[in-house]
Image (cartoon, rainbow, N blue to C red; front, side, top):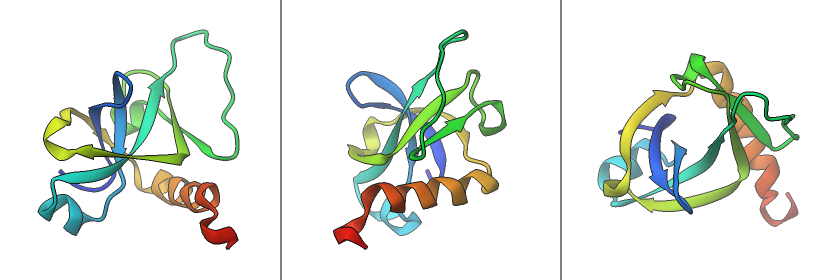
Length: 108
């Protein structure tokens, strides 16, 4: 496992999750930080807001998938199943920016 991979995780049911913990944490610790994503069904009317990212086939997913970048979850690494893909480099910067904006750490 490594940062930016997409796995299936149990966050209120099985969902795609993006590993956003640092590589050292993923290697050494049992719990990791993830972004929960939701698969969008064809025909679902949805447009991303400023704190959401859209993943798709370029990232290894079958369908368009919405990731909320302003809500982080901690999961047991051993509970993650089925590697689904990996976030493309260009999208990593966008997601990172949205995580920082969404958290607005101490109003900074």
